[in-house]
Image 1 (cartoon, rainbow, N blue to C red):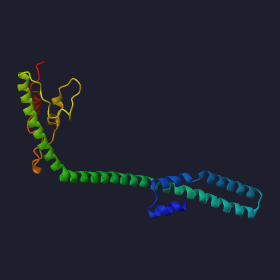
Image 2: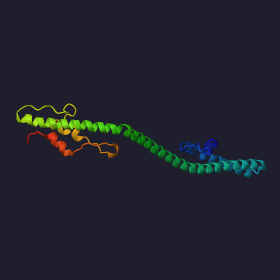
Image 3: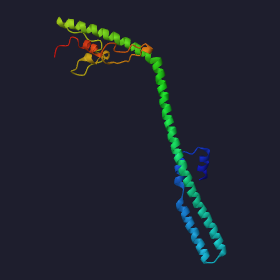
Length: 208
């Protein structure tokens, strides 16, 4: 019992420490000690044994004091437990916020250092892919009219379509979205409406 109060005084007791101390309070044994001391005192009084009465009253005083100590300790521990639970919950929330802010700051810094250049490069790649796709689509329309086989698309080996669906509608240049960030010099993608690239991807398709 003294150990837990030393921890409480030093501010090192956790909620689990306090719960353990509360569970260790043996009120049953203390109640029995009081009952035994009361019985001994009654027996001494009946026997008119003054020395026994003195001893019994002394034992009863100690037993009642021990029980009162337990009751006081219980009230104090319960109050400290509520404070500890609240404090630990607050500390947990602080850790959650700190971890989230740390990861946010790391990601923000990486976006600033690497993301902008990556987006610019990807926009440039997509622009080249879309331009080539437009040329291929136009060529295939001409070749189809002349009965010649179509040439493979720019992305045919990278983005195969699900069975029975038109491949070009699944191409990166058609489906990727990057925001325009003028302050960072990122043009964004697409730089034309989505339907424009769908029209390019669909060029030369036979009528349904």
